[in-house]
Every structure is written in C-alpha cells, then in structure tokens.
Length: 261
Image (cartoon, rainbow, N blue to C red; front, top):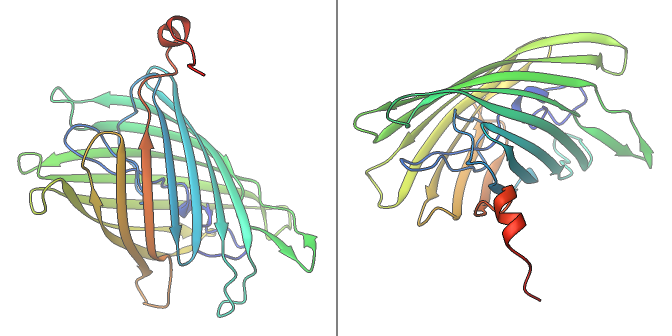
C-alpha cells in the first residue's frame, strides 16, 4: 500500500507492513511498517493512532476468532508542495493468522492477506479512481540474546490490477525487517527497521528508528523518525499511541456483563 510514493504509481506495499511492535510479554502495535507472528488474545481490541509530518493513521483490529485478527486502516496524507502531491486518503482491510508459535511463546510465524487502495486524489474537485491492490505477507519473529533482541522478518507480494488507471497488472516483492532492542532503557524498546518494494510496483527503500515506551500492557506510546536511504524525505517525525482493550469481545463476557449508565 502506497504510504510512501504519494503518487498513483502504487508503492502500496509499504503501508501494509502494519504497525506492530514487540515486548517480552505481548507484541505491541505501533507506527512501524513491520509486523510479527503474534495474534492478540481472542476477544481483544487494538486501536492505533499515529500523527506525523507526512500523514496521520488510525488502525482498528479485532481478535474475533482464536488465532485470527481483522484490521481496518485509514491514512490521511498531507499536501506536499515539494513533491506536488495533494492531500489524499487511503484505506486497507486485512486479516492475520498465527501459523506457528515456539515452545517458549516468544517467537513464531504469522501470515497476512489484505486488500486496499493506493492513494486516490481529490484534485480540482475531481476524484480519480483508486487502484485495485491485493497483498500477502508472512512475518517471522526470532528472539535473540536472552530475549533482549527480537528480529522480525517480513517478506511479501503485492499486485495492482489497474496500474496508472490503464487496466495493466503490476506485481511487486515487498520486504521489511525490524530489530527491537530491550535492556538499555527501562520499560522501553529501541526499534530500527528497513522496508521497501521491488518490481513494477517499486518504492524506494526507507527506514524508521524510534523509541517505544511500554509502561503497561494497555497503553503504549512511541516516537519515531523515518526517511528514505537517499535522504530526500519520507515519513519524518511521528508520534503514536496504541490502546489495547481487555477481552471484551468474547462471548462469555458479553453474555454475563452489561453496560452501567
């Protein structure tokens, strides 16, 4: 999904590397593009709010079925006069399945399947049709150095069935990798990642570095900086906040509880 080209030439693969971080107890969602193996416990809701120099994002995920999460994401990109791109809006829907988890329950494999729109433009009050994008990916998480380092590896593929609104099909290979470093700053993780897309849906390699504060299991803030490898600009500074709910969506909870007015 095209978080990073901000033009109608796809770069769509970048946005679907959604936004999840990691700690030794739970993997924490955040404004990073890489993901990991873990699916939140059945009945949990997750809400991610991110605002930055290039765009703002809201993500909602719901663990409605054991080992599955379902995501809805919306992104608002600001007008960029330097790149001559207008303000525009993108959306995506995707699902995540936990394929395998190790005996220690600190690493494993997850799989993704999604559909979404690369940027549609409101230009001179005319709306241009969005692309028809579909994507898939897998995420492998490897714990290292006594759980002080977690390495997320996420290869994938994206296809656009309407490249440049010309009914041409374009494929791309997406890649993302992230290191989560613990034990240096108390209750915090230092995070660094690299991601991009190769093929006809090419997007430039970009990186993000940041600090994620993990004071508890329910509210996780983070501050990051992102750029592309050529140094010509990308996400810039971003602040994000993740909110996890208790397991309110489980049938047992719903049947035995009621709202207090």
